[in-house]
Amino acid sequence: MGTAYTKRDKVYLERIGNRIREFRLEADLSQEKLAFVCDLDRTYIGSVERGERNISVINLSKIARALKVQVSALLNVEE
Image (tube, rainbow, N blue to C red; front, side, top):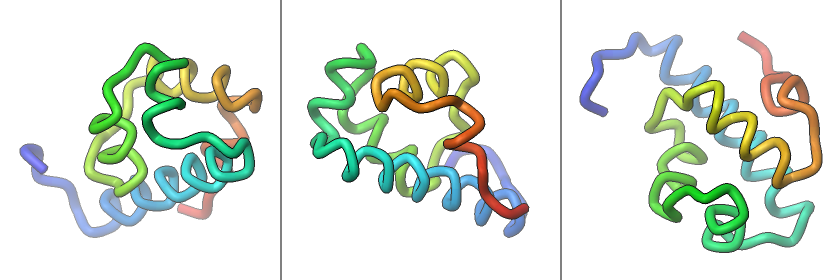
């Protein structure tokens, strides 16, 4: 990652990425299909799921809509 995140920050991003992956798999969507529905790049979705990106609120909203869940469901992780 280009930005220096603390270990705690990195763990938090990974947990959010894991939640997104869980919901994507439950929806039976590939990263490519999710990216298409969200109008995002597949590599972006992959990097979010791996916790490599500090996802924007707008993109988080796009992903939540595509997965048919609330943004709060994606953020429901322990800090």
